[in-house]
Amino acid sequence: MTVFLDAVTAVLGSNGLLTDPADLVPYASDWRGKIDGAPLAVARPSSTAQVAAVVRLCLEHGVAIVPQGGNTGLAGGATPDRSGTQLVVALDRMTRILDVDPIDNVIVVEAGCILTTAQQAATDIGRLLPLSFGAEGSARVGGAVATNAGGINVLRYGNTRQLVLGIEVVLADGHVLDLMSRLRKDNAGYDLKQLFIGSEGTLGIVTAVCLRLSPRIVQMQTAVLQMASLGGVLNLYAMLSADLGEFLSSFELISPQARALSVAHLPKSNWPFSDGWAVLVEVGSGSAHIDLGGLLETALATAIEAGIVEDAVIAQSDAQRDAFWLVRESITEGERAAGPSIKHDVSVPISCLPALIEACEADIIATFPGARANVFGHVGDGNVHFNVIPSLEQRAEPGFEARVNACIHDRVAAAGGSITAEHGVGQLRVQELAHYKSPDVIKLMRQIKRAIDPRQAMNPGKVLADERATNPPA
Ligand SMILES: Cc1cc2nc3c(=O)[nH]c(=O)nc-3n(C[C@H](O)[C@H](O)[C@H](O)COP(=O)(O)OP(=O)(O)OC[C@H]3O[C@@H](n4cnc5c(N)ncnc54)[C@H](O)[C@@H]3O)c2cc1C
Image 1: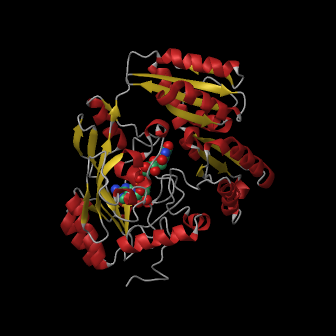
Image 2: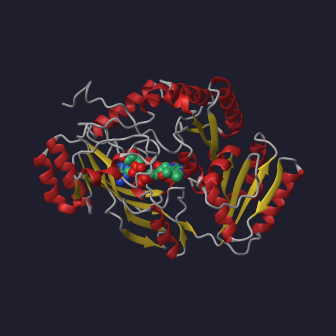
Image 3: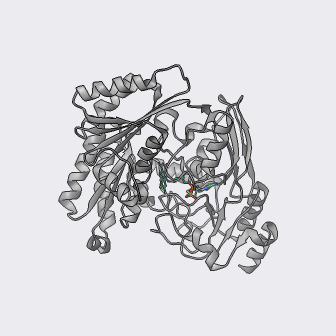
């Protein structure tokens, strides 16, 4: 490996390759500290040409590659295995904004650009980059593309897939595939960029991205609602969708446990209700001439009169809005502080959501006494995070996690849902993907993987089981 590492250093310079064990630590484990890997080294290229050169060296020396962005992923996709033979290729030196254009309404960035930096650049030209989620201060645009990230604005603007107009990818043979379109309409053949979006680094390394921008929001209203019952959430969603139309950008469900975990973790919080299920609703408009506050108040009054909502508080200032969102965005960190959890990132048709949550909660109480459910999610997207925090004894119980997963995911599958809505498969859900997807789908995915990455060098063992041992590449 010395020959290989010397060759990589020759391409990247001495500060572009990390080999000291202390330097590798931040790149070796996932955000939750649940999965530990042992990278051979960490390559930190500063240009697409350098990424391509490193990939060619990997090909030549038979080294597997693990692409890494902000390392905030929740499925272990960016963590290498423990063999000490995989090279992490970190995009954290490729952070430039290449263009922001208010006529084409696009932003073009290198893949290592931090998401909040890209959002700010859009704001600076009076536009909105609506991709937003709790880890946006650390996650990188390439990572969001590779995981097809969702977040809090999917309801109105779609997930990452809907926002990407073009990408540049370094393929497994080191070839740079230029798909950097900024076109809204392009029916010239297969839409190849879609293959790479959400492929979690298994088909290539995304090096640059062109994202569509939206008109900036000039007024916004945010409210926290205390629900009379979980079941009322569907009626509420239908009512608000009808009354508020495209102004509705967020509709976030927060269970009592999720609120409690978040609030306990925060040094200071401002959340209006101390029990019951809550929904955080946000509406926004690009026009100053609409009485958005009046519209929201009327819609909420109707929901209260109908007995669906018990009480509602509309934020009276930006500070209060930020305080509401802080509680929502800190749930994941609050859960992490409470100890290891078993995460589920599932989606079902929206109409099935409350029944799914209630059935899973009943299952957990009956089958796994002592375990706690932490439930929150993006109801408007049919996406709920049904996380389970085991007791100390359960943590040590062999096979406990697999049994909990089967319990939740069987119910999701029965409702026609997906075992991952936005976090991806990574290495955590490889076997479950194979179990719940049809053999036809897995077969086609394998064929695509073999066609694009015949040596199986790109993030092996993620999304699909690593088949190099059983079926070595020709
Ligand atoms: C507090 C918190 C809240 C979160 N909230 C949400 C949420 O609401 N919605 C949501 O969707 N996700 C959420 N996430 C998950 C995570 O932030 C997203 O998946 C994010 O998109 C990952 O970006 P990253 O740059 O950190 O990628 P990483 O974690 O570094 O990588 C994730 C995957 O993408 C691959 N990858 C990374 N960069 C590239 C690249 N340039 N080319 C090819 N492959 C690459 C990696 O190999 C890995 O498989 C949250 C995470 C945290 C910690």
